[in-house]
Length: 106
Length: 269
Image (cartoon, rainbow over all chains, first blue to last red; front, top):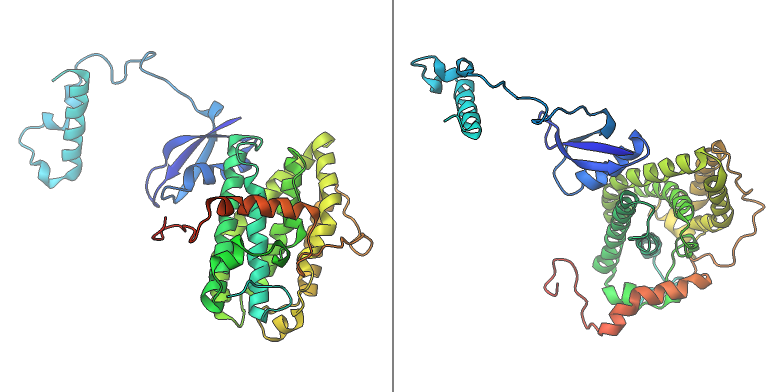
């Protein structure tokens, strides 16, 4: 049985997928994951989840974000905002610009 | 500096040497599983445990070097095999491919190790007490690992259960030698190097190991009725399996004719 392993570096960080382990059950998966994924890198916490229990939808099956113009979602559609006042606005702008570039919209 | 020889050691030296030799020789046996363990995960876990045990051996050998003036070749590479004082439990050859044997040996050893470390935590010799804490924090994984495997090997009955039973039958008498005294056991306790007598540690070990194994439907030999092996290790007496293992781990040293073997992060590395 395959268990997907998610590692958190520091308390408060997200758990990020880092690989998997073969194990017969959750307890053994946690034991093995400690060695395989928590030994060499800074680790605060590990999650394991059975591979079968992870749902997936990918770009072949759906259009993430839709196909029509949704530029109204962009923070930068509001005029004359000084993004320096709000970090999250600046981040959102950067994120949206990057996404647009990847889609080839810009 | 001469090699350490059992029967000719101060209480602290005697205690350190049996600690170091147990860890070192057990790690040698663990590493024989590399690339042969049942799964890659099992392989990595056991390799990691072996590295821990080598690390612990290093802590105790370092103390013998720093405090008593021995050199590494006296302690390992050039020491007469008859001057090693580990328990024969850790030197026994693993029956070919018998994972249950390794799991049982690890369990019997790791419980004894925890109790032994507890008895050293308040050692009158401060460098021992200081190092015990480092070792203790790694030993928890070893016991959990061994018990997790034992629970699963015995859970389904059949061949795996039978193998665990036969490993217990074979190893239990040798495990009792973990508590065999060295010549100066009384001085070790009187000087507070270890705060509890081996006989008391042995009693605690039996109180833990026997009920646990019985809960897995494993029959544990009666400790007062088992025929005790002639080789108890602590006085330098060893089983026939020891000579070959000793020869193997010193072979490279002799083949390469090191004047000064490299150590990690040293100038010669």
